[in-house]
Length: 401
Ligand code: PHB
Image 1: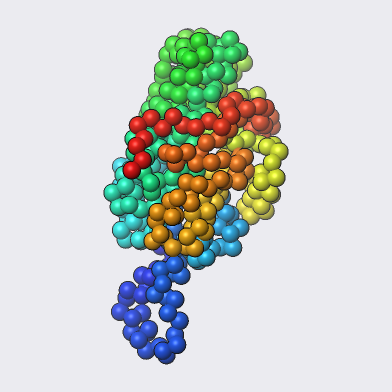
Image 2: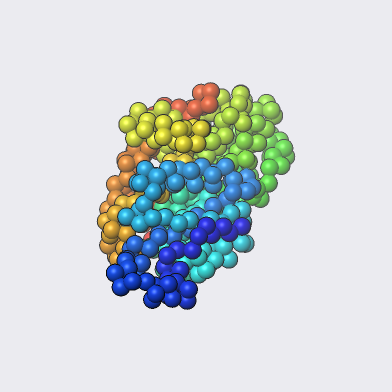
């Protein structure tokens, strides 16, 4: 689904009708329509609005729009126009969807997405067309690794980032033998890989790796395998609707009180109302959590609740920070997207006052951020400590042009 709300002034200018209208206008007619930075800024939101990640896409959109609203509904002094695409978390449709936003809608920024496979295709389109891309979730390590580029930024995390610290957390508790389980695609592979790296470094080992295809939720046979393997701990990567079902199934299978279940915080973020009792006490690692005693977090939570009538989650924060990052870049160049070098430099130098805590942008354009340890209490992922302070993704293979 593509929903262009209105053509930009720039697009209108190109049309014969607009040219005629201008020609007929009095000589003192404003010439600002011809100046790039006063045309509307076109933002292409490519996110999942259907499927297992639909709620994540909504939260990112809400967070992003809140940041824009707080900036006076302008970025770099320019009014905003959105083009919106539901990417369905479907990698096969991603090149066409991204190309539509770039070539047909002529967006100034591509913003998306949740699913790593879709984001990898977006990064390719962004590189091929030299379009600015800001990723408000998808953690695909390659995007701030071998595929890193001056025009590509991430306001979220790399899949390695929240996963790696959990390895040490469990090993330090004497939980040395782990089974991992995930959807078999980039995010699951890299998340379980990051955990394995952290665990191995801390003296533990992964005794079994279990997989199922995205977005499959037939967990029963895998739960049977876990029960038979009797590991000290189970690490899983699931998110959205799939995470809701997995946590419920794990408890229903009687495993919750027998084998500790851990994961990156996506397992319990934005999902707790639906998970209820089955999630109580679960511990996860993530770059955001509830109850962070920071002025920015408090004002953000209040503003988000007021605007949308619900609590924000990590996805809302990442969308909000994507808006803040773009605002920082465009503010520095007064909305002139043609000043690409200065725009990129300003985004690289930005220190984002995030609800998660202030963060900077690494050389590979990924947040350098604290990874919190959280525990589920009621409908909160309460922060109980810091699992790794100021963690930068290793950015293996990134050679910034
Ligand atoms: C991803 O595909 O990179 C991904 C999806 C959902 C999450 C986190 C990462 O919650």
